Amino acid sequence: QVQVVESGGGLVQPGDSLTLSCVVSGITFENYPVNWYRQAPGKRREWIATVDRYYPNNPVTTYATSVKGRFTISRDNAKNTAYLQMDSLRSEDTAVYYCQVQFAATAEAWGQGTQVTVSS
Image (cartoon, rainbow, N blue to C red; front, side):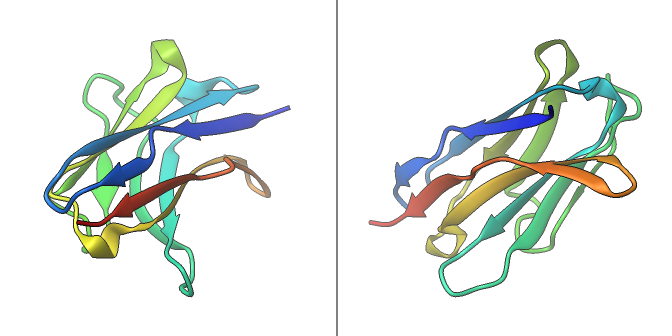
């Protein structure tokens, strides 16, 4: 059974930084890309970042325009963990953040989400 567990959310002030973690079990972690999504109150869930499975020493990463330049996604295959480093946080970054792994054509696993609140 594939399990995804996020952690690291919390309440921070605008301009602060926060790092989220995503621990994945039940699959060969290094073989799959990992995605971060977020869902703000009253809004649809949106994709924000992907770290590819290739080139573990220098993985390919992609970002949504809304977070590019402020967020950094990374992975540690030895720890079966992906990270989302969030810098220069804004109030509009307030959301529940989810980690997702697509491990088959029609199979995916999601975590339970971790709340990030940016407020002064």
